[in-house]
Amino acid sequence: MTASSVIHIHPAGPLLALVGNPNCGKTALFNRLTGSRQKVANYAGVTVERKEGRLKTLAGKSLRLLDLPGTYSLYPRSPDERVTCDVLAGRAKGEKRPDLIICVLDATNLRRNLRLVLSLQRQGLPCVVALNMADLAAARGLHIDAQALAEALGVPVVRTVATQGHGLDELRQLLDRRDAWSAPQAAASAHPSHEDQARVNRILHELGLDAQTPELPSDRLDRFVLHPVLGPLLLALLLFLLFQAVFSWAEAPKDLIEAGVAWLGEQVGSALPPGWLRSLLVDALIAGVGSVLAFLPQILILFFFILVLEESGYLPRAAFLLDRIMGSVGLSGRSFIPLLSSFACAIPGIMATRSIANPRDRLVTILIAPLMTCSARLPVYALLIGAFVPQRALWAGIELQGLVLFVLYLAGIVGAMAVAWLLKRYTGGHHTRPLMMELPAYHWPHARNIAIGLWQRAEIFLKRVGGIILTLTVLLWLLASFPAPPDGASGPAIQYSLAGMLGRGLATLFEPIGFNWQISLALVPGLAAREIAISALGTVYALSATAEDAAQALTPLIAQSWSLPTAFSLLAWYVFAPQCIATLAAVKRETGGLRIPLIMLGYLFALAYAASFVTFRVSSWLLS
Image 1 (spheres, helix red, strand yellow):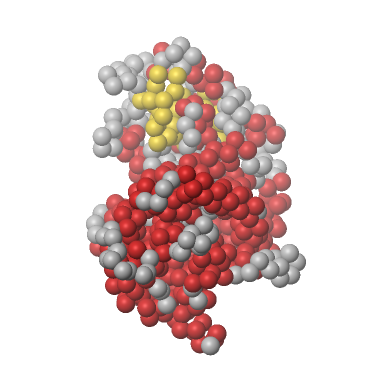
Image 2 (cartoon, rainbow, N blue to C red):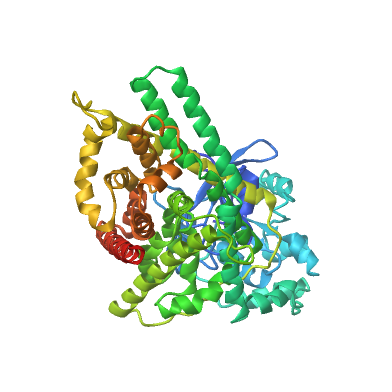
């Protein structure tokens, strides 16, 4: 194929691939070009799968666009980099080879980024360059001549600022030009040439960019943020304030939602005659689903802080600070980002382990990811803390409830590190692997990206409420309503139902850790997703309550009927228990079999039962 030849477009339509180093703004450009609501973050490892959207050129052509995982070279060192290499080489299952590559360069760091362009040119595919973050480069005194860079590379170059949408029309216009789809002569080998660095240095010299860059404000700030003593203290303070805000900020909207749910239940209950329809609507749908919905404000506040830390560039620093601690248990700081993702949900955290090159580190990170306190646990924690821990200011405005929540999150982290240490000790993982990762410059978070992230989280939560939670709540109501109680029965109807029989049977197993039959029953649908236990408790207690108690919210009902050791025991259970079938399915998919999911299921249930047993016995003894 000659340098002037043109790639023949596949009948299914042109396929473009966005390729670039981590932190080059590639995903932000993808969002702008396609209108996708893909989450944006500025640290390596967040994009662990290729993601597809469609863009329209100025001439109206519709093109498929893939957002591939960030990579520093075409030597795949981890599963996520292998995804990129397989797509570019045409080895990806079910996907054709791209017709054109859009290589996204970080204009503030051309020395590293240009080597990837040279490697991509040897793929024999048409290539155009998006010179991104041009505004940050200009602010640092780096004035890049895009035309001169295009001549030096032999490919079209467009200046872009993806976060602001600048340069996108120029890029769309370029994709309408025939010469943009011209492919270079394919090299015999796709391996990087020994002359690549010399050519990069020559290009930088021609552009006048080979001088050493001055010290940046981010470098001066890192002297404080990455200080061996002050840095960890700052990280602990930020996390502590986060959990304080989860309770103090969410109180008003949570009370408003609970009042709305109670009002709706009263209105529906008074409008319908006694019978199965009223019970279904009031006891199952409103009491059950409404119990979960009240915790949406706390979930959004948690994610707001996480998104702000992501957007600001602080999270890679947190990984750096924790590298020494994680190295002591046989992991590297690179495991931090997948584990941090697991605070949102263990599934994306497990998928994010594809950025970990070492197979043992990746497997250990997968095994301990469910111990990170995901957002599905937050409604359970908030319910029990709200019922049994008083709202009390301790000192300096610190709330007791927020302190307890912080301790629960800390317990999950400590448990995960303990499991990792045991695996290090008994699986031969004694070698500490140094962490090498890019620290992006600090910048103010973009309100648009934070709003998109919060909307996504709310959408996911509401879909779960209206999907699996609603379905299982109705199923539990059916089991709790049939068969009807016998003639002359004096207790609530649920005691004579299938659900009541199942709950009493399970209570035998869970009695040693302080669980009553209502809790034991709620754990069963809670296997599908942790927060379903809240709706299950709401339904069970609504069906168990007397007429005068039926309108009460779930929090005061459990506060009256549970002992404090029982509440503490259930909190300990939820720190460790693997009550999420979707997580186990993700582990099976990532590890290629049932062996690892079964090992995870076994050790987490054993750990949860042991922790609850000790918590219940010790707290009962202390309170006796």
